Length: 145
Length: 117
Image 1 (tube, rainbow over the protein chains, first blue to last red):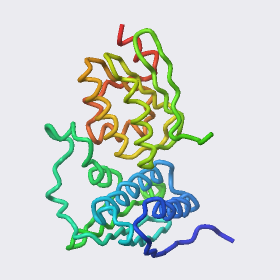
Image 2 (cartoon, rainbow over the protein chains, first blue to last red):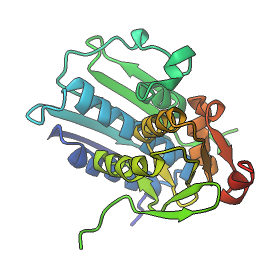
Image 3 (cartoon, rainbow over the protein chains, first blue to last red):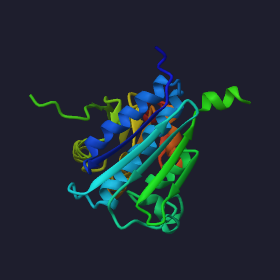
Image 4 (cartoon, chains in turn red, cyan):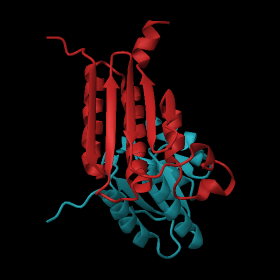
């Protein structure tokens, strides 16, 4: 039986980071089975970690009675992950660039920058409480060149 | 005895204290907090600190925040913070955030120690 199958799943979980990380591990497991490179899985791992922490700490304000929804598609071509919290949302364009001026000495505020850097696309919903991010399979991209 | 994570090794050299992080991943809030609580007492008084990341394969932005807090504390005490052993994937995180421009980063602990002489 071939392991090279696509996976789509959706989980609604209490906003507890350790529980959400289990879903992230599942996604990485699917990605490895589909032959994603170590660089790709590192990128997805980091982006998910940052997005999950943002959802729980900033979105749900660490209220573990509020849920976080993770929906994902893992196909041989790409990994698409949507993480939604129950917070009021934020305006991504209003986030200060953590690389500029005194911001570089701040102890936080780098999560969104890292997500943008490591994923191929990211989008927020209008409310600003849901991020959808996509990573293309770089092994497949190379084959198609 | 309770297994405290992340585990660190401490080596007191002539010119610096070298902290080696022995875990491959630093993720959990508790890990970051424990690491900070382990490191901060080491920098009380004027001290040079080298943090060796050669075992670390994955970290998140929470660790970057910790490094900035440690760096501020060391600067207040007129000491120096040097980082070393950062693998290419982790170094990319430093480059993206431009923290490679504010931290002194060396290939290994030996080179970091030599820079203090």
